[in-house]
Image 1 (cartoon, rainbow, N blue to C red):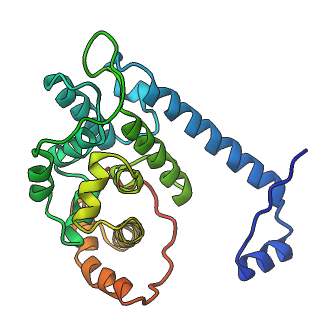
Image 2 (cartoon, rainbow, N blue to C red; image 1 turned 90 degrees about the vertical axis):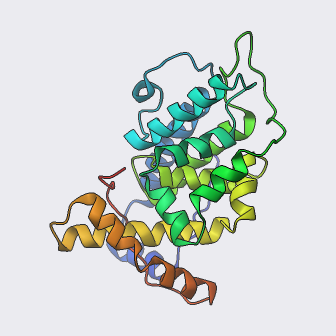
Length: 250
């Protein structure tokens, strides 16, 4: 049976040793779950887009994220595009308007209106095939971005895929229109990931401390985010946040 080495930080390694946690069994279960999720999204992203039931096609996606995907598909079909590209996914995110990803972008000084403007410029369509009717497949970059979104969610330890994970997938994917636009405007993958982490940690903390409704808690959590990002840009290390629960606004 092949072996896979797992490297842990010193403190965690000592804690694992002291508690006698069954590392092999835990890693195996986690990897099995991750493989199932990636396999499922890969099959969905590469298949034909015939079903209208987004909850069936994307069971791990939050309601907002499914809305973003549906808006992307609708826009691509309305344009008779050769496929659903990353630009359509990013446009769907902007059109949806109330998701955490947009608030993270605004916190790092990226204006959704400018994103929309850049998306309206003529660009070369992303490579892909569409069959007999238009816009029935995701482009290769869009499929990769969706897969990366699931990977990001898994890395965070989340059991859902939110718009913040999709944003990270779009920023990280190297070939799509969305990633190029986001990176040009300053959405560096590493900085964006830290911004998402900070936003989620602040949101969960405020929800635990107050009875504020989810939307107000999320807005309040993002107020100090710009200062935290400035600290990151100065190569200062912020405190490590706890793994958040599913944001209710997502």
